Image 1 (cartoon, one colour):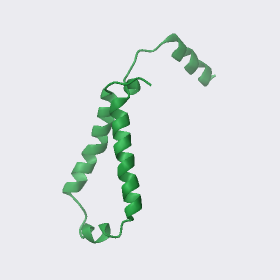
Image 2 (cartoon, one colour):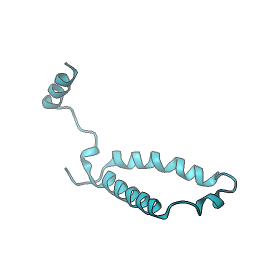
Image 3 (spheres, one colour):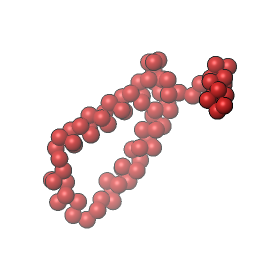
Image 4 (spheres, helix red, strand yellow):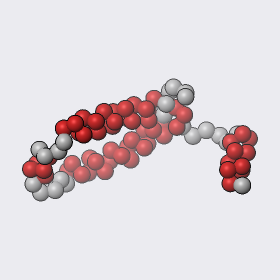
Length: 81
């Protein structure tokens, strides 16, 4: 694992965040009535997972696009055959 900034991770997080921002502007009618029935333990676990995934997507530069190498091409060729 290589540490550093991942611009691909930032792009994926933006693709996840934009629909959520649009949804908050257009929430369903009477949504507040249903929110109180949500399981609090699952809500906490969901938030922890979101935070950890966001940090991992930005911190690990392994997600960045890299040039192809002979080893990768041979591995892909062997996987296809």
